[in-house]
Amino acid sequence: MKVVDLKSDTVTRPSLGMRQAIMQAEVGDDVFGEDPTVNRLQEMTADLFGKEAALFVPSGTMANQIAIKAHTRPGDEVICHSDAHCFNYEGGGAGFLSGVQLHPLPGPGGLITAEQITHAIRPFDHHYPQTSLVCLENTHNRAGGSLFPMEEMERIYALCQEHHLAVHLDGARIMNAHIASGVPLKDYGRCVDSISICLSKGLGAPVGSLVVGSKEFIDRAHRYRKVFGGGMRQVGILAAAGIYALENNVQRLEDDHRRAQRLANALNDLEPFSVDMEMTQTNIVIANVKKPLDALQIAEQLKNENILAIPFSQTRIRFVTHLDIDDRDVDYAIDVLNRLYQK
Ligand code: TLP
Image 1 (cartoon, rainbow, N blue to C red):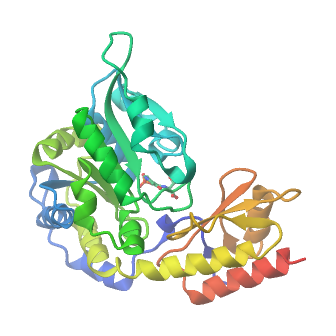
Image 2 (tube, rainbow, N blue to C red):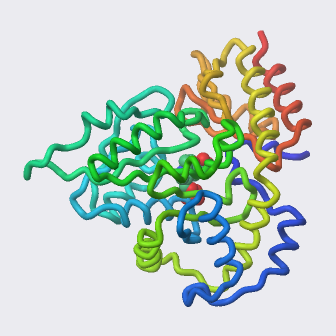
């Protein structure tokens, strides 16, 4: 019996076409900058976002942490949302690796506004840390895959330029944002200084992320990739999977979004669950669980039916659609949910 794995879009397995691309990849030693496939992936990604350069790194976490390191100095402060991935799920990396403190701001839907940031920027006074970076996230994972509105990103970028702050975008799922909103990738590139992009989530590659930005920023990022132990050798085999993903698996994200909508609507029809449909704009569905049921118990019950989901807390459970989930899997999940939780 197939397991319907809705834990994360990181669980996809490379398709046959992707494996063929891996087989045929030309490789070289990338620490010497001599892997032609890595170089092609980097150029291609920088071009997509209208930026000067890009760097291939092993993970989304490393991409974000390299960006934080390259934009800050020890003792600085970084503004982010209190639900941001870099604040919650990167092992305290910003303090550990860059010696910076994070200044998390609250806000509905993973959204922070230019007004909030204006108040959070520290004045020049030797008592205070120096604010040097703002980190945004689009789509926003803990907010249910929601989109960060373009107008607000533009306002934030203008404000940050005025205050000489850098803006980094955690774009682990920026392709989902692009497909759901129709915003051209170059528009995202235009209103941030750097972006991290994951190939190993909805795009279906087995590993890999990129950080993109100016040439000068990427030169610094390159040094930190080495320091963080992320210099890799004949990784054209992985870059080939990334190129294949960018060429074949972007437009199809709309299927994942459509399936997530179906799942969200079905959950909403059931008494124990409620899903904020306004936040459900891409491939992530976060269901609030009403008492006396709790999310951990529901994850266990679903697991017994070969459906996997992640409890985010006792009252929230996350389902993620992806390349390896088709319409029949969603039908099956909905049937099971109806059987278990319909009154
Ligand atoms: N997110 C994972 C878990 O860490 C929660 C997931 O299953 O969603 N930024 C965002 C917005 C992410 O969601 C993730 C991974 C990362 C960065 C980190 O990427 P990796 O796992 O490649 O280090």
